[in-house]
Image (cartoon, rainbow, N blue to C red; front, side):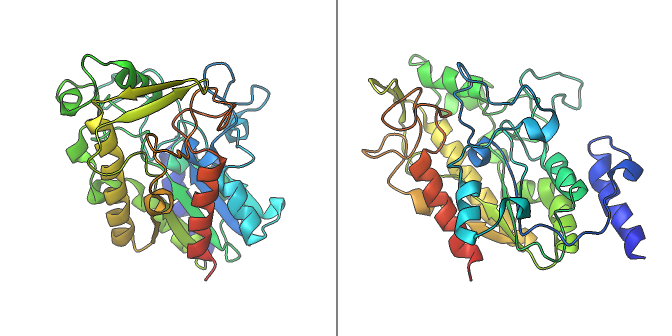
Length: 322
């Protein structure tokens, strides 16, 4: 009976990525202590996405996803005293909850080629990482997704940079109305929970002793702020004064994740609280600029610096250490 239920549950995950249940079904395993699923804010690879690539060209699949040595999952594993072989990190740049490269109307959206939560979880299942020994499953996703779900508009890197450098039009509420930015009202706890519910239920069943941590995103700017800042080469400090929609996007994600965690009966890690006062425009930002030697020369712009990652790791650890 357990074997049949295992095959059925894995089949649910596999169906979402067009993998047969027979190929996807893992053997029963004790599991790994720590499993992390997430996007570039999780993986935080040592790259800038322009001069330095964010993937290993000599590897395929999730093994090609680079992970920064100071990224919060790596720091968390150290805080937990987890050995490398007992830690599965399937986070990957451009990953989403469930946003694919093609909309339901058949529109192909350039740049949408990242892994989904289902694919990352399926790989962990294949590797035998979910089991009674699993202590923590941490998930950090959402900012790469389309809101609403089937929209062709996401807060991808191209749109972010376009908004940041577009002084004339900016990225206020007009950007949403003009289709240049995701629909903020679509980012709700109910929508977020619905999109990840199957994976959460799967993890709860096959890692019954694990704490499932939904990890939020750092504070990019205080609530109600209008500015978005960007340091270039450590010499130029660029300010976009019309970025209310960009800032609100992150704040809506925070609320949606908190509400979704409550609905799914899992834990929410408030990373905004842990990084408050260190946003992009603060006197002491915990974010990377572009090729900024003062913070992190090889780091993705707008992503956490090593200090930011340390704060996130500490916040997650405070939830799992008790």
